[in-house]
Amino acid sequence: MNLILLGAPGAGKGTQAAAITTLYNIPHISTGDILRKNVREGTPIGIKAKEYMDGGALVPDEVVIEIVRQRISEPDCVNGYLLDGFPRTKDQAAALDKITKIGRVINIDIDLKLLLRRLTGRRVCDKCGETGHITTITGEICTKCNSGKWIQRLDDNEKTVSNRLSVYESQTAPLISYYSDKGVLVNVNGAQEIGMVREEVLAVLKTQMTNDK
Image (cartoon, rainbow, N blue to C red; front, side, top):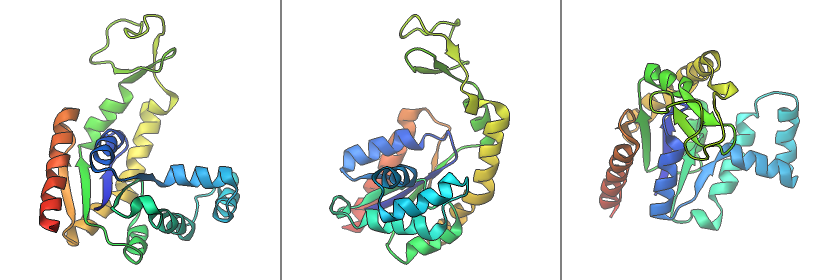
């Protein structure tokens, strides 16, 4: 079962990815993590990627595609995998089609205005790292460690969040129509409570596995 998880920043992809990979025992593949691993280990492709990263440039599609190709050919992917953070553009999606077949693309669909409120309202404890939201936390002190203060991360300010969502909308959102046209896309309501989103995602996968038999 080869899967892709789509969704804007803050849509909850990480949480749902953890549930999927645990239940189905398939690897969660993040291209960002793979890039950093290759750079650390000094692999040929990592050295090539580092040249671009050190210069502040985006790693070219052909390098990222090759990293993905190598990763999905590893033994732990024989029963499937979950791609998260890739593809990011239609060109990357077209290149991916040439090296593998995707069974299902799950898009965690949520209004971007709601995401903006969700992300800019997020707070983190400066001591223990606990996360909360201004709509639910009370007072300035973290209720988990009872010593740290709630703070807003620098990348959760409105300007930065708006930019991230704008980039997503212009570059990645077109993937929704790309995979919809191929008949493999399923939209899941990301505005629900986390547990309900998970139930909907797993129901989609259960149906997919039944159809594959």
